[in-house]
Amino acid sequence: MTIIDTTLDVEERSIFTVSDAQVAHSASAMARDNGVSAETLATLRQDVLTHIEALHLPSKESIDNTGYVSKDTIRASHSFQRIDNLRREQRTLGHKWERLLHHFANGPDVQPDAIDPELVIVESDRETGDLFRLATLLWSVPVSRGFGRRIRYLVRDKSNGKLIGIFALGDPVFNLRARDEWIGWTVDDRRSRLVNIMDAYVVGAVPPYAQLLGGKLVASLIGSAEVGETFAARYGASTGIISGQQKQARLALVTVTSALGRSSLYNRLKLDATTRDAPHPSALVDVKHIGTTQGYGHFQLSDALFERLRALLIQENHAYGNGHQFGQGPNWRLRVARVALKRLDLHEDLLRHGIAREVYAMSLASNLHDFLRGRAATPLIDRPAARDIAAAALQRWVLPRAQRCPSYLSVRREQMLDPVRALQLPLPLAATDEDAIDVRGVHGVDTDG
Image 1 (tube, rainbow, N blue to C red):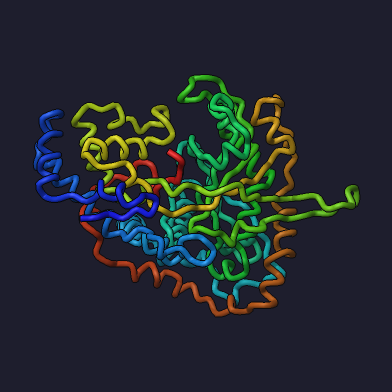
Image 2 (cartoon, rainbow, N blue to C red):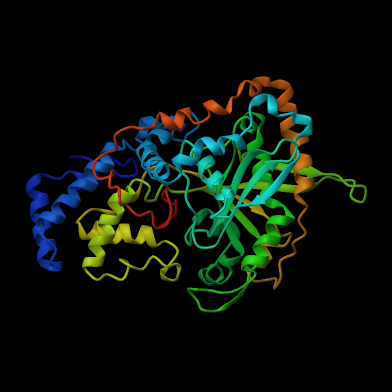
């Protein structure tokens, strides 16, 4: 069996070509070392290889004329994972879907010149939490549940009470080369100041606002004063779980990574504002492209497979087996996968999925680089209100699109879940465990190891 990874040359690919005899020999050797039965190890090893092969991860032929893996290929690579996520959500949320649909607009419900966005904080045990979860099921790539610190928002249209979109901020991964090189960080800088950064792990609009470039409106609102104030109230004064040190965190930077390779949502996401006191345009929001990821993550390991890999480490009394608390490190799931694959005599390049994602940065402090490099003790943050950002975004994107493309009027909320309902398909081997535990999130985090 050969698992193809386009980041490897021909000789390196041979590490994934294994015979039944080789599997049995490797499993026997590992069993002698750790006491786990050779049959268990051989079965788990083969299941990992079979599952990853079934995903049909990108090859060179998947790259389009932009130099990126095609969006259809990325969707296909995530399809089994999306089904797994859907089935889990259907068991716990499915009975509420029809009732929650009234929060979504029909096309005629939207009057573009009357749209009045407001930010609503999501509470997990309230209807806002259910609505947030339902909205994420509309994404073609499964959505993470976030890491560590977490702030989630609904963006609602006050003119009709309907949902425009959602966004969520969570703790960033520790290693992200594009971010760290753009900031100019040393290892010590990153360790002491990463607390001032959050990652936008969910961003987008739902129909019919999505047809009106509502995603750009939603993304822009991340830069509002209200979001910074919520962050300060929740996390401004806290003790670092890893370091044990007192942290005076300020939200100075938000990063975001594209889900489908090249991003039309974040590309050229900039809003200028002119005031009477400042006749020259000043940026309300400015999102900059700062690089791409290297296509390394763990989404290709289903939740059920991951739990089996984790169980292997628990049985061996490895520290990572039960080390999923944030104090054990921000890349715990990736570390578990790497160590467990090594235990199975599998190369860690199986964690290279080959999907390069664009990385963007939204600076919220005028002295961002000086602050994050330690040359300034305090970030200079003076963010506009959500209403000002919304007004500019409506004029810049939403109203012109409504005039050019009235197709939003044909949206019917009753049809919104049709693609979700249609995803009741068989899962690949080892991905159907009804008791699989989602420990850190639904999709694999892209990182640089």
